[in-house]
Length: 83
Length: 397
Image 1 (cartoon, each protein chain N blue to C red):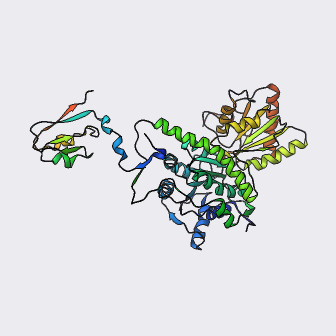
Image 2: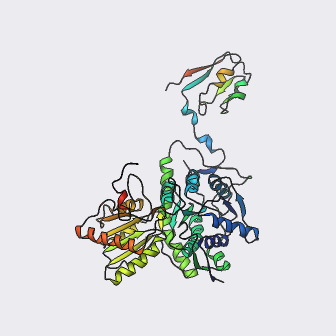
Image 3: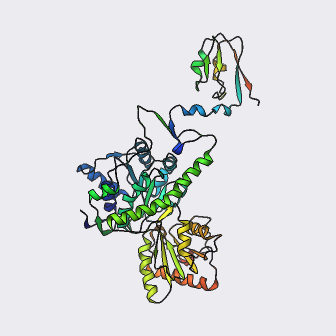
């Protein structure tokens, strides 16, 4: 819910799931070795590493495709978003 | 202690702003606003004004500086005119949306093209929908009072909206009047220090202007509700000013000789003084004419105007601007206020644009025309009374 004057405490932007803008969806294949390069390149901090593998946070990922382009293993593929 | 001395309208405004003890003043020169901020700079140089005085590179920055300053929780002020106000416009939406109670003097001047620095209301009319409260004043004494009132209205926690005090350029800013300056002690009592509802603090980070995908509609409605609440606040503050300082210029509106009036004139700004003379003159000739001065243009005093004019047989609205493709903007709002309520017909007149003199004789011909319409029982969409006949019907360049 929006506050009066759109003024709120920090961190509230997490409530806005901006991932709904996405038209292309990055998907991580098993060939991912967890190097973490995509995590560094992601302009929206929407990738994190879990058990040596890249995990995409689709709540905020906008599908820019930089991760797929930069992945040295070619382990990230951009697929059309379908709902 | 209060004192009366003769001064320019701009200086009266600067005196009022100084007495309100702002902490930040941003300034960018534009005629006819310049003398106000120049005088504030002199106060600062003499050590009479404690505020941080920020000289900026444009009006966009002038508005942005007071946005930032107000967000940190301090009383902030700027002034501008015409093109300058239009350059501020994007920030004005943000100031209102973020509920920052700054005060701005909107010195009314027309907008290019053609280039001219003469006064009319074309500039502030464009700012109508920003969410900024607009108070239009009749004379410099009212401008002085309205600035002191403006901070009190803006900073109320139920309102929290920017207030723009609109005054006609040159006619008020550069003419000399005896002005009653109030004593600092009494002003401090009337206007205590600003207590912000929220404020930026490095120790407690806040987001100002958060993102929204949905609920923009409801957010805008909250602004509308705050404006609606401002109606009562504007009235209350005007009455409190009267009790404290003994002067009253009207609340949302001011009625002048409206009892038993058949024709009611309605307008805003400095033209009201001339209109009062015209009404007195016509009353001597037993013509039943009255006058409604609109002080608050936003929030628009729909109910107060209806109550003031409902018994009249015709309302003649004089606009100092023209909404191209529609007509007089004030007249349009007055018509909306009376529609569905069986109000009297509304005659829309445009006068005084680009600084054209509005004389007692101009007002008298408007009343004359209105009396003619009254007998016919209806009014045309616009009556081109104050226009040069040569131009009417001219479409070629």
